[in-house]
Image (cartoon, rainbow, N blue to C red; front, side, top):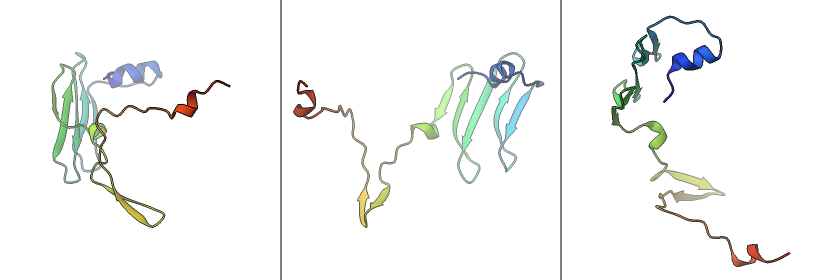
Amino acid sequence: MKPLSDTLTELGIAFRFPIKIEDKNGCVTYREYSDDFWYKYERDANGSPTYYEDSEGTKLGTPKSAKTCEGKVVEVDGIKYKLTAVKDYEYKAPEWVNWPV
């Protein structure tokens, strides 16, 4: 992950270290120091950490971006479907797609 200080510098936005971002409950979600060390947390609705990552490569938990929709129920045209993840799926076009024109 690119440090926030790099992005702020590129955008010409002035800042001071340490950079600290908190969620609406006052829990730290990101902090960066002048020695290039940074860390970030993702938290659940109760404020408990669900994911931690830092600039030294430590990663604990599962980031929100890695979660799937497996098990969720969706409704299309009045019919409910339960989603499942398809592992190693490779799309194969129908034969007619490759017909010469």
